[in-house]
Image 1 (cartoon, rainbow, N blue to C red):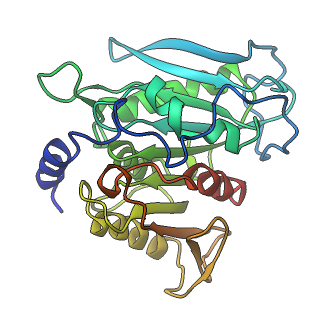
Image 2: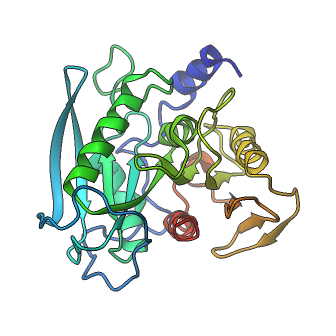
Image 3: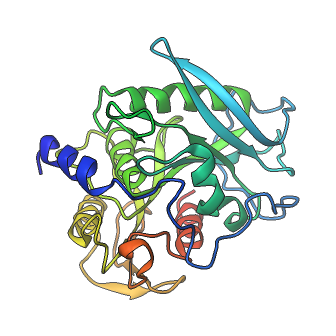
Length: 297
């Protein structure tokens, strides 16, 4: 699919998806503030510049200037954060017309991780004349890849960060796939695993290394057709050298493909939930995302 066709799909099809007014998780979602002390084992990785420096924990609103433009985000640092131990960093991208705070209200990844990860929720900028029509640029030279680079560097310099991961819903799922396409890899600042929900892409050749992925999509999605999710699945499955055969894996209804190379894992979670025209956030999404992140240290 050409980028112009992608833009048309996103602009027209995603008008009601992923925004703050969209339903939350099928079961209401966990309370992201109900995360206590860390007792889960963080994923190991090489220490970053922020290791050894005590920093504030809890939920913070931040601003970073990228290309002369102030960009905002919500940052959640678990109460049990240990500055002497590398902690996973998860980028979580909201859907079109959505917000960082809105994504945090229903993604549920903080609870799913047991407080074992730092989670950052970037805020998108308008993608049309409507100031509330927020979203992402999916290109290699776009403002949002630049935002990722700058924010990743800042967080790694401030906190003791281990591996980096990405997840997103709808337009945020497209952003997650694009990010892995351009920044997939194991070096500092690169993304090791992703969990796109109800998204699509990437489109075209990817300069980044293959990543682990859990791709989630609703059979009855009337906003982003399931063919988009199937395309994402096939891209990452092929890139990782996985077979076409698969085995069931928790959480249901996910499957993991056999024989992936380089320690990677690619998983597919096709569900039949009908919330938000099949485009809602499935109840298993956070658990499935955290599982693939844990499986890719």
